[in-house]
Length: 161
Image (cartoon, rainbow, N blue to C red; front, top):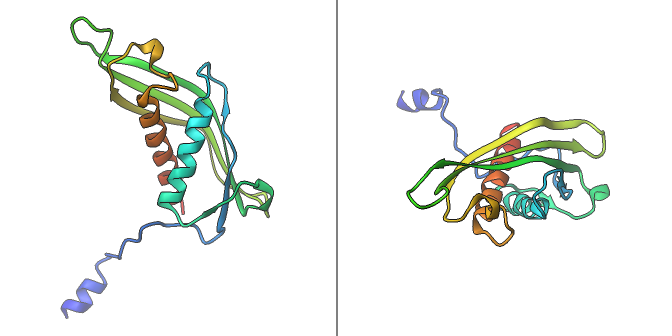
């Protein structure tokens, strides 16, 4: 009786990823940058590729024409606003807001599998630099933002299936 109750309770074994059976190969096209932040698209694209490799079973390939599905995106806004101030510094905690357009498309059928023209990523980060240098490619904070953004995108896409 206990076995019958346990099997009907709705619990299921969670798997590492929930990849779509619709496709197996994925190309991540380099993101387009419509912000004033130099090279942010390269950092975000690298983080997206790394997140897909770590969290999905998709085989990532470079050539979009040979992929089953293609991920494209545009970074349209990237800001950092101080939210916590410490005496003698400009800010120690910043709210980073990243707005993007994201589209996942089936290459064979042309069908849009996922599309969000207003994807917004917001997170707070503690740093020890002024806001003008926050998005410097040398700042490790940008790497943390990129990793968190990529993880958010990948999780959203994997949960969509």
